[in-house]
Length: 550
Image (cartoon, rainbow, N blue to C red; front, side, top):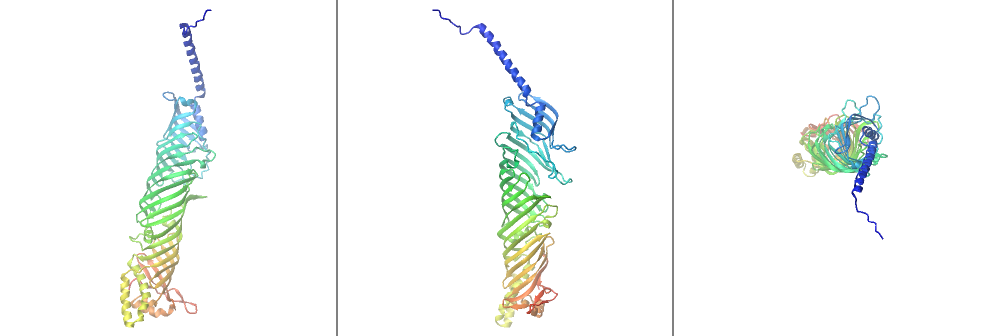
């Protein structure tokens, strides 16, 4: 039997195999070239079509050229996105230079390595302009990094005389765009109102074109050098930091703020204002709902909740807040609003109030509205003449007990006690009342307070702008009203004493506080109406007596 032997290789076979392999490679490359020529993603027409479909705009390009090595892609110059077809309407987006960089491996998977937008400007028309925006589609390409350093976002104003709000992005990078997972972002920008610097990073998406409000977002922020002086009536430089998470139509924000020299401009009393807050923000319209805010200034802490939100048919946003404090200091609150170096009163305060601030250009004290109830304990007036008026009332009320002994000695002791009390502060206690602040004027009702031996019931007004006082009411004392003053005034009141009604609890007489903070009149209101024993009202006189000093 003969065995057939096959050689392992032969020179003629190798010569035939090499040309065949080369031919096969040429065919494959030719096929790939034909496929890429047909499906090349970076051609002018293909790129413009993708941009128009993604933005629902008409896209125009001033210049275009493709790039192939070391990375496939293209460069577009003077790019405009015209969303509003109306003649003369400004473009929604303009880009000076748009560079798209892909990779050869990504040609078949719609994967873009980087898009860099230079000179990007976005102009958002004002609300109410009638322009409708369709929901952007999610990108059909996965983009590793979209970089837009130096971008500018402008939001138009309804007022044609006002410049648009301008957000300037020093750095902006968003990564993993168009994928099934969330995109991540980093940004540093200048905020227009209040002007300051924001640094933020976080995650966004995935994009939901059917309900943009449900798109998730999370991250943290740092807001620095925010100048509150742009808001009429207040001043200070604020810094804030915190975290946020949720969906675009309900972003929960938790953070802190610090304003070392906050002040109401009309008072000129800088104070360090620190807050801790939990708020919910609607990212679609900017409405903010304060769930809990704790503000601390000097030695007082105020808790609040409310909203800063727009109203239908009304430009701007209105502030509506409920405030409360327990065991704070009344002087801390008053110093926020008065111009005097010292607060007109000191003491322990608790209150609950509702505050509303409508939008508009009026000064802060003219447009702020407040309504609430308050209580003050251990109160005293910082101005000596005002405090002396309170001391006189208390001294007169207490002096009645001195008459139980020798009459002449009682008078002598009474005068001595009164003089001593004028040098000391008589403490107000159980101060309670209801206040309505509107147009810069505080209107008090059910205002009551106690001093040793006397209790007052009053109502009236105090103007925060002019500091004018106009309070009237009654004072019930344990002694005759003539004992609340000295000298000629005391003699006059003894003559008028029959007009006052005496009950078992003491004397009831009309009193008033008028004048201004600098020059208060604290005394008897003889022009008031009194009740006689038959409950008929009779005039008590027409002259008031100043009890602030004799």
